[in-house]
Structure formats: structure tokens, C-alpha cells
Image 1: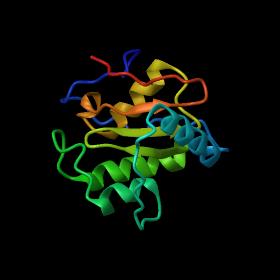
Image 2: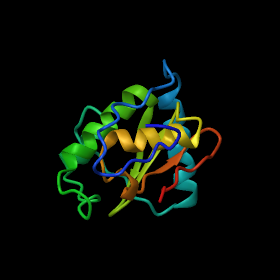
Image 3: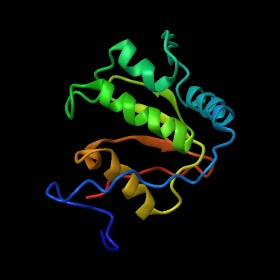
Image 4: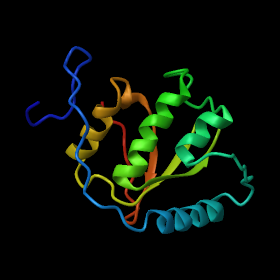
Length: 143
């Protein structure tokens, strides 16, 4: 793949991007992120979904946020479930077309972040996932 982590749709799937190892404190970080989210948006409503994880809740609730990219929310849930395990990602909030995550062990470089995006799907560059981590870094779209 060379030094550029981006690929064209004709290139082969690069496989899973490496995680940083054991993830600690993911739930605590998610709680902090929810509190910060609510401070910024005090009129936010709470929704409860009977699901095993935030990733599964998206499909169970019938979320259509990514419908302009893919009508199968289960695919998004599968990717997020993997990110929950490998990066300590937690769903913090869901809006009409927005998904807010906390990530306890995010990629540390732009190249690693691009590998994570590229390892999920060919259309990953067009999915906007707003990520807030301990250093308040934001993931960004790569063109």
C-alpha cells in the first residue's frame, strides 16, 4: 500500500487496521463524553434501546442515519461493534444523520486513522463520524 493509506475502489481491501492493544477506561470515557455532549446540547432527549451494545442499538432502533451511503444499518453496527472491541469506541449520541462516538484508544496518526477508515468499506471516506477522545481530537474526512 506504500506510504499513502488511501486507496481507489479498484485496489484490494487492506484488511483490518491494527488496534493499539488492550483498551481500558472505555466506559468511563463514554460517560464523560455524554456529560460534555449534554452540556453543549441541554435539550437532548434520552432514548433507551434493548440491545447488547450501542453498536447493536443502531440496528435495533432502525436508525437511518447512513441511508445516503448504505441502507443496511447492520453493516454500520458490525463495524462499530468491531471498533468497540478494538478501539474502545462507544456510541455517545445518535441524531437524524449524525453519530457521536467516544474512542478510548483511537489511532494515533493520520495514517493509522486512514487505515481504520479504509479497512471498513470503500465508501468510508464519505462517512462522517465525529470522534471525541481524551485529547479532544476530531477525526476528519480525507479527500
